[in-house]
Image 1: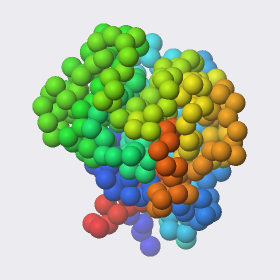
Image 2: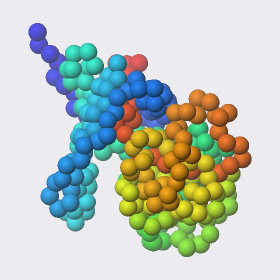
Image 3: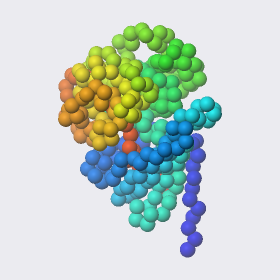
Length: 317
């Protein structure tokens, strides 16, 4: 019996297969499946490449689907003028083990990470956001801008970079995305990165690889804070001052203990850190009128959720 050729999708085709709205819904389901052990997602295997690069192997299985993400992260590629992340996500039939399709790894990672932030907004934000602040101007900032444009088209987006020039260049390059549902002025840089963040901003998303806090204001019940970029114990984006006065939640409780540098360096009591799965379908369990910080570290279960969305799209569902 002749088997059909496995379909391989490039970055643009992968993005079309996993739009943000259904991806957020798939992550909601996957977060519960993962917490209840219906998805098996072991700690990722990390092996070295040349010049400080790393290869990451991340499998996940569920009764309906299995996936394996294999990506290489090479920071030295910046000097080469090529992307720092390369790789693929392979989806398999959970019964036969046959390969179903292959997606672009960096695209899956970027979009499911931004979608997890949006699930955090839907779950934890006290009201529909009117103004976002993105701290960082890299690839994840682009993904988050896309997600906000699709899911919160009327929101204004502010951008804070490591310098005013970086923030201004990002806004100029992505004005069309920021304008979705509004005008180009809805995407604007913070002119002075050292100035106080406007009180009107109700969601802050940190998207850097900083080793010192880029946001450390006192917690506010009307401002939801998300940390995305810091993914090693040495990295810190959200400062201890913000963390100390806030209720703390993570996407992956096991992974966060090893990777959430913000929480690790703040010396948090992990007993007071909750998982999003516990409250995603029951926000009545959330603390009332208390600031909330949500830390996202990612895991292969979220890549499996993205492949569920892609499979549905490919089946014509």
